[in-house]
Image 1 (cartoon, one colour):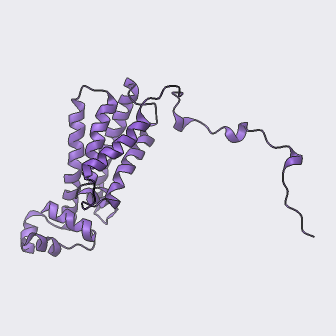
Image 2: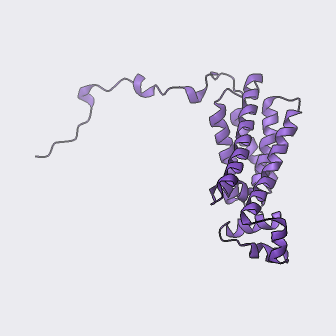
Image 3: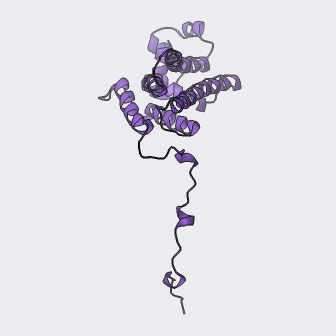
Length: 215
C-alpha cells in the first residue's frame, strides 16, 4: 500500500491524489485502505519514513565502519541518492511542503534535522582525520543534501540511468570537491573575506570615464 501511494503521489501530486485512487491502484475497496491507515496524511508520512529509513540505516552502518570519515560519508550519500531516486523520493523531498497537521510537520522536520546533523557530523570527523578538506560543515551539508534532493524533481525510472548509477555519478562529483588538495591553504574558503574590492587600487580620477553632460 505504501508503494502504491508513493507512485500515486509521484504521478498526480499529494493534493490531487485521493484514497479512492490508491484503492483502485491496489484493486481493493476504500474501507480496506482505512483498515491500515486513518487518512491520506498518514500515508504520505509512511511514504516519507519508508524512504528516509534507508538513509538512517546507512548512518547506523557507517558508525561501525573502520574507515576514514570521507569513506563513511560516501557510503551514506550513496544510500541517500538511491533513496531520493526511488519511488519514495518525491514524498521525501516534498512532504514538508504539503498542508500537513502541525504534529506531522514536526515529525518530518525532526527526521530531516537528524539526517542533516548526521551529515555534518561525518564531515567534521572527516576534517578531523584529514580525509576531507577543511570546510564549513553546515554549508557543505546543505549543498550535498540540496543537490541530492533535487534528483527527485527530475529523475524518472524510465531514464537510461538507474537510481544507483545517478547516485554514484553525484558521489564522484562530490568527492572531487571534498578530497584534500595539495598546495591550497587549509583556511576555510567559506570564512574568507572578499578583499579584492578593497585591495584593488582605484583608477586615477583623471582616467575615470564620465558620461557627457547634456546641454
